[in-house]
Length: 303
Ligand SMILES: O=C[C@H](O)COP(=O)(O)O
Image (cartoon, rainbow, N blue to C red; front, side):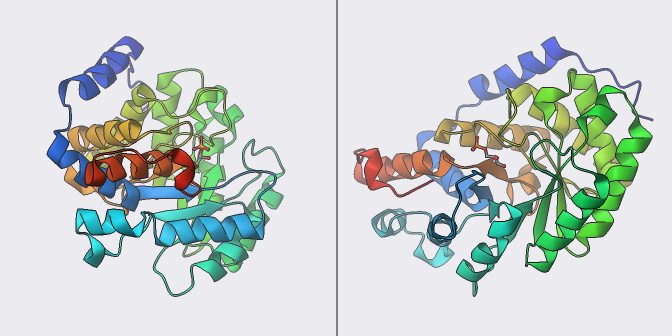
């Protein structure tokens, strides 16, 4: 059904370029867009030296992403702003669950041998079940890139289907690792197969590939989401992730979502920004919006 779908790289790059150049967000609206980005951030730490303490600090930031004077200056105290989720490795899930108790912030866990995904399937499925039992609400799985490179869509579908089942009530985000899929046509096909196999979100990257989230790749994925909705009536979310560090990135990806999928995809149930360090720049820009000056970056806590 989707194999013959043409994807033209030059056209995708052109469209991605015009999206951000043409439609600059007006200054007055910028703060609102940045606050919305915070609602959609999967605040992430995925490092070999992660500790309980680091996860607790991250969760504190997820609960209160902006300094009190910025919240006051923006007049958004009532909003009880928090990030879309916290995203960690499986053994860090209990720490995140404990630190987020009493909030509605979901805990997301990567699983399935993240980031390469090259452990045996039974172990990858067991890892999902471990994270869900530990309290994860969302599981970010990685796919086997070889299935895509060999265009073995049946194998890819079976794998994601089994992962979907292992997730139980938890949401599944399928990381395609687009930087390793060679062509945009592969990205489109892998998106379609992941959605058909039950992914609640499709996600660009682990943050560990040589090339992570880019706008042209994201364009191809959101068009797949659009096509999938047209055929099935089912809405799948999108999560660009990896290498996005600035408030400008947060605006660019939101413009993409609005232009290609509409306002419904600017909400955390259908859009997440996977990032470990983007919040710091967003907070800096919002502080400037409120006070007219930039604080030294060391004054802003992690993320
Ligand atoms: O899913 C999120 C990514 O792993 C974060 O990547 P980053 O550290 O480049 O922001």
